[in-house]
Every structure is written in structure tokens, then in C-alpha cells.
Length: 315
Image (cartoon, rainbow, N blue to C red; front, side, top):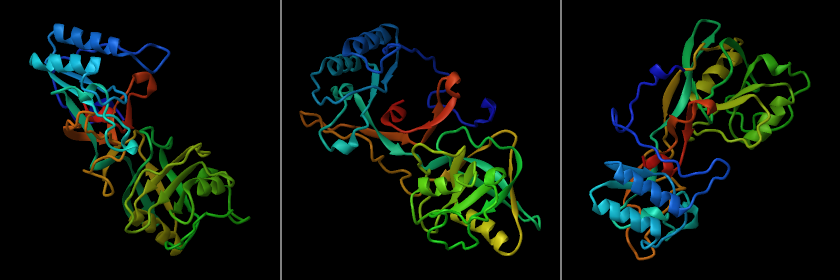
């Protein structure tokens, strides 16, 4: 997926960026002294906007970093700091720097689209259907060209597809893209039963009237798993039920596509922290897209990824 094919621009095209290192090389934390020094240096370097996707629990506007940030705002510099990702802790749990007076504390709103990958399913009668699959991360399946499909049930209404061990006469699934219906048990149970028959790549197809989401499997044992829409899965199963088969064409280069997030799109992310500050100031002041954001990471880590957090919302 070449960089020139991304087809999007950032929030401040052609702006000049200043970056200040505040973290060490071995440990994930930093101190307010380093943050204050970085903010002061940015101010002295003439920054028009200072953003920090950093913070910790602390609701007092008189905190050292919050106070320094407020004074920089009073000099005419726009300062935005992430509100924090501790929404499960309840109210009065604002993030330290963002509690500063006049500092813009930014909460997270879920993206209206999920990032997905595009493919094409082809049936025996040349019936074709574009299918997008949602996979956590942006690496995509390590597949290219036509891949045969195996369905674990010919019943598109199966309530517990692959929730128990597959039949003894199930073929070696290593050469197939396995399609299995969602529901009846957890994803990891289905995955294990499929991998017991040497499955490597798996598509779970959604159930009707259920919002599509990224499937989640901790300690996955397959090479790749993803979710596809209910209608796409039913298209495949119906072809097999009628005596045919299906192959899926994976492009040589991964092709990204947006899929509507009908569950949380445009709503506040469940993880986003809430104020008010310990002195009853309204925090956060604004929400911005921060859930399921397709963005950049270091080149050595893959260049692009999908992340969620107020750290994505604040910039």
C-alpha cells in the first residue's frame, strides 16, 4: 500500500513541525520538568500551536505543568493537551496538563469509518462481489491472487458455527481462506477449532442487524483473522449451498477502504477521560476524532497503523 495512494491530508498541510523529545529510550514515563522545558522551548522557538498527547491523573489546575501551559496560552499560543484515556474511572479524573486554565483539553470521538482492506470474491458462474475485511492493525493478510474458500457450514443461519471440534472428514484447511459465521461462542474458540484442522487465515462473517466491529482474539493462533459483513458472508455460503464454490482475489498491493462504523461512529469513545477539574472547571472542552484513527507510526514499525486514544484526538 504505497504512500502516494493514501488519498488524505493532515489537519495542517504545509505547516512546519517542531518536535521535542520528552521520553527516555528505556522507560515509558516522563516528568513534568521535562514537559515544562519542552513547552518553554517551543514557545521560545516561535511555535503558534503546541500539542501534547501526554498526561496522567491530576485534576488540579495549579499543577506545575498545567500552570506553565496556562501562562503560555496567555502569551497567545494555542495549547491543546489530550484529556486522557481513563474514562472507566468515572468523573473528576482529568489529565494533568489539560486541566490548565485556558488549555484546550481534548476528548476522543470514535471515527465514523473503520479502516478495512478490499478484495473480490468470484463464484463459479463468474458472479463477483467486492468484499472488505476488517482486521485489527493495517498489515492485512499475507495473501495474493486467487485463494479458494472453505465454509464450515452451509447454513447461513447457523447459531454456533465452529464452536465445537470440526468433523473428522474436514480437509486440510491450510490452503483455504476459511469462512465461519459469528456467534454462539467467542472468536478464540472458533479460531482454535479451525486451526486444529490447519486453518491459517480466517474470515468471520457478521450476523444480520449486528454492528460490524474489529474481531478481538488475545494470543491468536492463526496467521490472520478478520471480520466481513453479514451479506458478504451469506453471498459466499449461498454459492456453496447451491453446489458451487468461491475464490477470493487478494490484490498484489493492499488496498485500503472505509467501512461505516454504525456502532460508535461519531459518539464519544468509551475510554475518554472526563472532568471536571478538582476545582469544577469544565474539562474536556472539546472532542475530536480519536477512536480507530488511521495514522503514521515509525517506519521500522510498519509506517502506518490504526490506533485509538485521546492522543490521536488532540493533534
